[in-house]
Length: 325
Length: 254
Figure 1 (cartoon, rainbow over the protein chains, first blue to last red):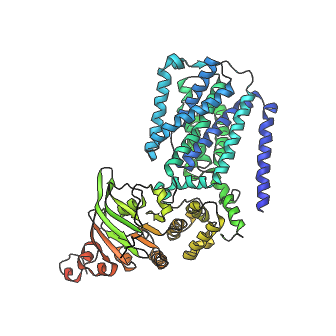
Figure 2: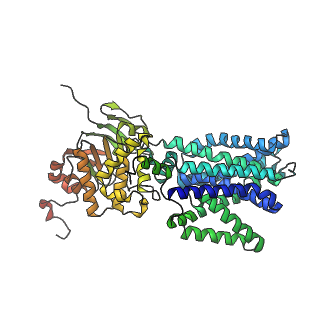
Figure 3: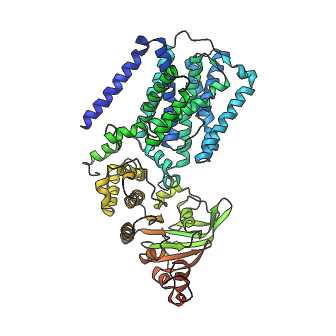
């Protein structure tokens, strides 16, 4: 039974992987373009899920790292001619480097103060990008040399998304994942169980800044253009958070479900009912939060499709003849 | 004669929140194999004492000693390794995790050692057999009493020598209060040092060996639980009971 499930999930992952590989060859340009957007959001959602879903430090500032990455990558590409994929790696590192001092300073705040504090910080970054126009081009933005083929960008983003999914699965099945969830529930309780909360919080915050910064850089390549309102768009932040909420915070499959469902619904609404698009998205999120506070994934848990207990500990228990259950 | 230092001592500690001192020069000693209950009115500093002892609040003045070793500067997450466990108020468990995974959070300091983890789990199961059939159940599907058992069980997974509980009876039905208190007594009988902060003062002192009465951030009174329960002043001021001699003066209905 257990084995069956394992084969099944491996099979599903395999099919999804093959589908992702062949998609650019059978899909239209529109499909590739839509998929890049979806996958960027998928990566953002997975990153946000680490700090917001697992560690419980929800915040409105992830797009700040996205924006930093967008500018670092674009400037390297524009001024120094650094290839876009290499620029994305440096952008990711820049995100991590900025996150270290920011995490140390901001994570002293808790709850709404941290959430809003990060939002404020992002607005400061946007103002900085706007004002520092000798380097960033200010409100005019930066126009990048357009890439002739978006397919390489697609593959890079898809690979990062796959890595994020895998890492989250590992996290969820690790002691680290349990510790982060304990921090989310109550920091004092976690600390008195011997969990080094400060170190883990800052570590998670930094880890959750890397991929968004890299995505920012790739988003600029995808658009061929970047300006402050695009790089630091609150809309990107809110959509990311809505995806995680809709799918299920602090779960492995939540961001995937949320990103796919919301992206497809967004796209359909936008294409068919542009006048009510934003309002309907709002209503969907409202209904989801009201009736499925733990997201789409919680439905899977109820029906038994998604297991509640973690395999790591099932294995540990099995080694001892299932004495633990 | 050598004096064996107590497992846990709080010496002349002043501490509080922001710049408001909640406790001022409080000294408490918690002997081995003894249940000590701290009682007192709201805001007397009961919880603050155990938070400082657990390392969650910094001691502004004074020190905390474990077996005579000064640990005042040690952060909370290191104190676990000295055998101190702390169960905060409000039976905090991770709601969507199974009972077993919740226990595993407590087991993380045991490292990757299945035998030790199993032994610790087995001890918790013996203490709270009600959890045994619920290992694969999500924590939030259990009753408040069972969640409190889980919260205590999780703290016990660290194999502590000293367990401190902040209002373990809060919001529990009388049946579960009895169960929890009874289990604390059996931990004590096994040699554990138990420290409890309680609002249900007479009930808690009834199962305790020693007690401290706190008032305005200081220790107002200490002694054996029996003596405190019999003390007219303590009864009148802190146990919410009106002594015989005062009944004639009271305005409440008999």
